[in-house]
Image 1 (cartoon, one colour):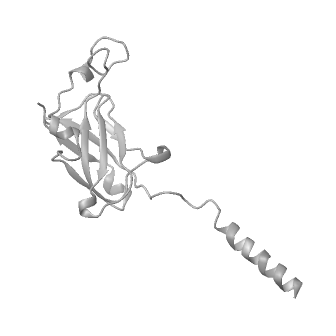
Image 2 (cartoon, rainbow, N blue to C red):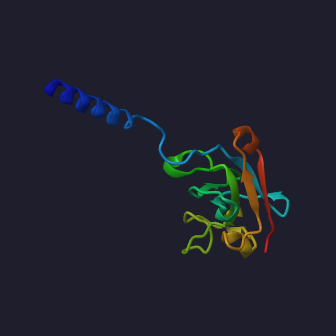
Length: 152
């Protein structure tokens, strides 16, 4: 009887340990890459682009964000710097960089194209942004996303 009890305890321990493997944690993110344009022109560097899951449309998961390069391109990054966003509908929030000392995006240098960033205030909040996008389950469908916003 004692051997049977020890055997059962051993099996239960093995079952518990198999659940502690290297299984992915958190939500699955699908790669999203794109370009931000302002009034049809490529945006400058340093502009924040965030995808906020639209809970009203059933999308759940973390917000993911990226920052534009000099030609307006961005790649979304989520938790633990994983590339992408959750599948589903998102509200797109776009914000110009800001530095309190300079009144612009700066690193202490003189004003640049990013300090001239002018985006209508409505894009700066998930509650007011008019831009929405659907992230598809297939990563190739999310490689050339174009986010077009208007200036002030």
